[in-house]
Structure formats: structure tokens, C-alpha cells
Length: 423
Image (cartoon, rainbow, N blue to C red; front, side, top):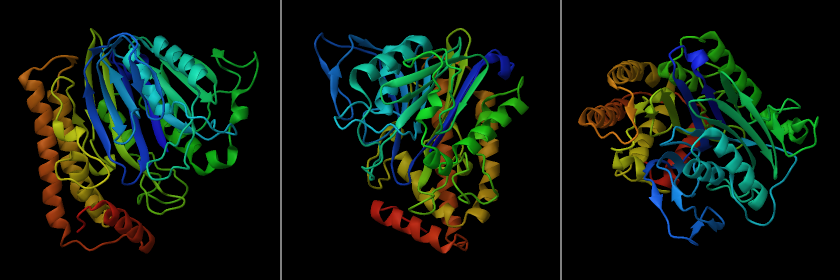
């Protein structure tokens, strides 16, 4: 489960465009944040994607990616040209091909590294889809989990929504905003498609799995939030959207929380493991914010500078390591989930005060800017987050656990198998 939005300058009211996404994956699946430089390659070189190799491009653009550690592709990212993409799992009647192909995350990364604008990125995905198909396990531990994909693709000029089923697709060009959440949203109102004119693309949807994914509910909540705030939307408003819960205590009901919390191995097994917000400013400038870890309701969005990445964000695999920002945060996150009702109010001041300070101080900047001020704001934010979460772990040793029996069992099982120190 995931939630993705793109908001154009007509609705932000500030001349900027904003992208936001929560990446919801398996609960103990490390998600890394990478700054990938541009590169030139020799001719006839191959590129190994997650399951298949394809011809490498002659040149690739620099990118910031948020990606599960084990795959080549990415859940979300932005490139130096101002193209931003996030994908969503779609549950359809069309099943993956038996021959390995590209997965949605591969398509996303390939489009970012090879496209100078949103239109090129959409066309790149369509062409790759036609040539290689989409097939292969998409889960970390669950190798039976696979899916089709939808994408929000945007730049400073506009927003494109692209939905796929097998090698078929439907595309919409949108003006002021787009929202997607694990369900097909394009019916006959597409601007381009592989299907015959007048064909309803939503016929591909698997209605049962789509319903239990909670996609329509989450999409509608994000849509309502955007329309309520239209004309005055900034990064902190998108942070708040990505923290939205259906109920005061999350993980209740059928996956209706935008800020997704795992709590059992059957219905609520998806967890927000990474979050990204990108502001696209005029004059080719950016502001990029990431959580670097699970559950945006329990941590702050911190500034990320492409030219000065924090090494700890790019470190981590399938087992706890104190060298990895994601895993250090996970030790705090997993312990906090067991005491959620008490801990969340205790950390809200640090989160909101930190974000207010960092967003106020961080200027929009060129992609390759390594200004010491930018670096200090970014690295200082991550140091502050580390410090606050370590202090909170110590405080939690004296705080009673309030989680349900099932949720407690689930998280203790997660942390045991990945070596997370739990308090």
C-alpha cells in the first residue's frame, strides 16, 4: 500500500509544485535514500535491473532515490531536471507474465535516469513496458507478492497520471493536482492508451483486493485535504497529509491510514517505511525532504541535499546495524509502536518545531549546490532526529506498553528476526 500526490502551482499558490509519497512496504524492509550522480557509459553496455538486464543508456541524469535495499529500482525519486515520480501497486485481473521482466520500481528508476521532462518519462515507461513487460516478485520476504503499477509523473510544467495492467496502459494529463492510492482511477477519460478508443481501463481492476487495500478511502482523504487547502499549500501541509490516520489509534480497520502502520500478518501487514516530499521551484531550484525511516507520525521530515547526502541514509540491509540511519530509527519506531498512545504526544513538539525551523531556514537551491549552510541545515536535522530518538528510547524504558496482544506479538516477531534492540 502507498499514497502519492502531485500538486501544481495553481493549488500551492506560491508558484511551486509539490510531490509527496508514503512508501508502504513490509514492516522490516530497509528503505535507503541515495543521491545517484549523473554518468556517461560506453556503448553496448548492459544494465542489470532487479530481474533482467537491458541495454544501458549512453548518459544518465543525477537522481535522489528512496528504494528498498534489495532491489535495483526505487519507490520514488526526483532527478536533476526536475522530474519526480512515485508508483503505486495496482491489483488487477491481469496477472504478471511468467517470464521475468521489469517491476514497477525498475520502470520508475529507468524513467528518472533517462528523462528530461515528465512527458519523456511517461513515454519511457510505456516503451519499456511494451518491450519487456512487468513481471517478477515485488515483495522482500513475500516472493509471491507481485502487482501492476500506477505512476504520478510530474515536473514544473505539469502532472501526468499513468496506470498500467500487463503491457497495456492509460495516461491522463492533469492540470493542478493528482492523487493515487493502490486503485485504478482512469476509466474512459484517458488522453492516451494502448486500448481501443472508448475502452474503460478500470475493467482491469480486481475489485475485492482493491477494496481491502483501502485505496479509495485513502485517496479521497488526500484529495479532500488538497482541495481544502488549495491556494495555500506548502511542504508542511503535505507532511501533515502523509501523517493522516483514519482513527486516533492507527492500524484499525482495513488499511485506511495514509500513514500506514503494520500490526498483524494478514490484513495489516503493510508499513510506511519511507516518505518523500519534493518542492519544485522556479529557476530550476529544489527543496527535498525525507523521513529516512518508518512512520512519519513519529519522526520529522528532514532536508536532503543531493550534493551533500548523509552516508548513514544509504546504509542498511536485512539486519539491524547502528551504522544505518533507517535501522537506528527502527529501534525507536518499533519500541514506540508498543506505547503509541503515550509516545506520540511526547514527540509531537520536537517534530513540528523541527520542521518549522528547517523549512523556514532552508532556501530553494540548485541541484548541485553544496553551500555549507545547506549542508549544516540538513546534517543538523538528522543529528537532531538521532538525538531526540535516542533520548526517547531511554524514556520508553519506564513507559508502560499499551499495544494490543496481536500487535505486540507481531512487532516482537519482526524485531527478533531482524535483530532490532527493543525496549
